[in-house]
Amino acid sequence: DAGVTQSPTHLIKTRGQHVTLRCSPISGHKSVSWYQQVLGQGPQFIFQYYEKEERGRGNFPDRFSARQFPNYSSELNVNALLLGDSALYLCASSRDSGANVLTFGAGSRLTVL
Amino acid sequence: QQQVKQSPQSLIVQKGGISIINCAYENTAFDYFPWYQQFPGKGPALLIAIRPDVSEKKEGRFTISFNKSAKQFSLHIMDSQPGDSATYFCAASIGTSGSARQLTFGSGTQLTVLP
Image 1 (cartoon, chains in turn yellow, cyan):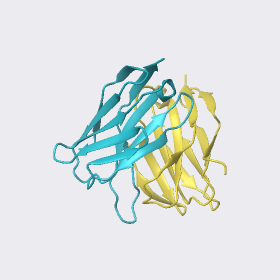
Image 2 (cartoon, rainbow over the protein chains, first blue to last red):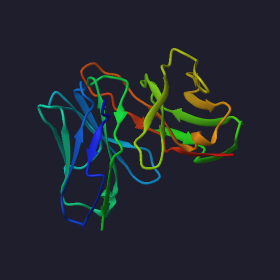
Image 3 (tube, rainbow over the protein chains, first blue to last red):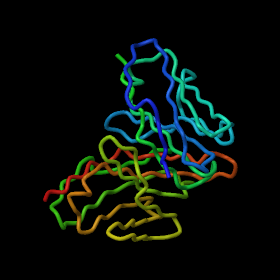
Image 4 (cartoon, rainbow over the protein chains, first blue to last red):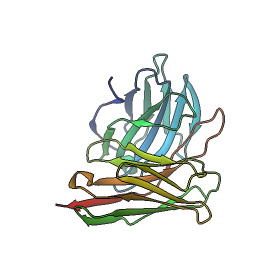
């Protein structure tokens, strides 16, 4: 079975641009979470979606948004990019919103110049 | 109150030695404490996890020790191998019915096991 797949793997943007990151969860998993991992730090929770509804949001500005599609895939959007948005963006899937076990993808490495 | 503090930042151990990584938390509502292992270019992978009603959990060479009164937990890697060289993250979360289980991660420990 395929794991959590994320695209793109790497991308470079300039300040002020917007970016869309995509995630496909493990087959059968209905919940997707997004985390931001700045270099040298632990991942920080951004969003969780379950059955296309937002079930949790971390302490991130409104420039960050996400959605989940009927096939349970998800995308994370970041508008008006800042240098500080440079990070590895991780997607994790789980069977439901309260599941203990999260399976992470390899992430999308975003560099903002 | 949501912080999880992890130490040391980096650790170098000889092959066959014991690696010990420590974490401390403040929020007593946390009810699930996983450890994740991350290799360069990969996402974190669940290694082992414990609930606060258990003082120790062992899976192969990996053991979690949990001290509820001190609000501390640690990961012990016995017989450390060069293949264990990775970054290790402790985490904690609160389970709430109908709501997201959000993981609060520590800052990570970069483990190097020398051959």
